[in-house]
Length: 91
Image 1 (cartoon, rainbow, N blue to C red):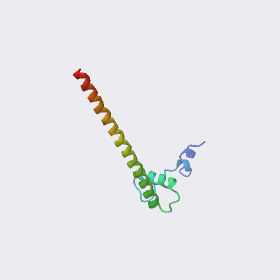
Image 2: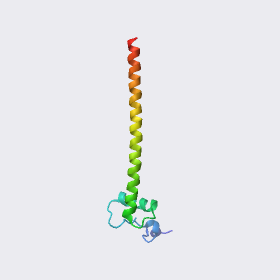
Image 3: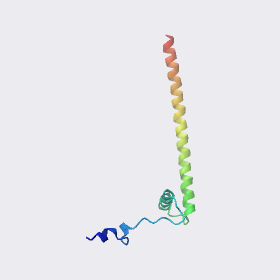
Image 4: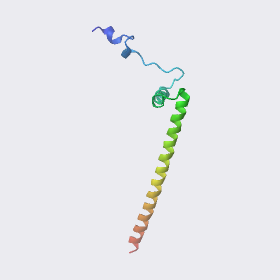
């Protein structure tokens, strides 16, 4: 093999990755690609992104509620342990 075969920009594996037009942020471009893959039935990109955001917010709120319940349960458990320790110290 010749050196040119390794560096030839015509070969697909040697081309620089193309950026999406209008998006200078590569992370945003990757997110939009992920959205397009996950929600292919939305004809326009903004609709898919809105659906992605809607689902992400829903999951975030569910997680927040779960965490709040766990924190409350732990706070109750800590309070019970404090009371038990106080009773043991009184003996």
